[in-house]
Length: 85
Image (tube, rainbow, N blue to C red):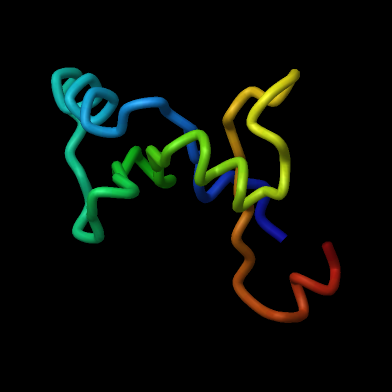
């Protein structure tokens, strides 16, 4: 199994402002975009910007306390690799 990170999701307070920041750095967005989430192709992985509140809900973690608002994803190529993890 490959050791790699497929997706980094950053929970942000203001998606429009965060998107403008990364675009000012020269990052380009991917094809799948909407008002709730933005994806940037970054080499061999994807960096996503999503609202902290929605990301906290997706991870079933309260958006308070020590949670940093970041998730990492490791995608595998087959159901057998999922079982191996």
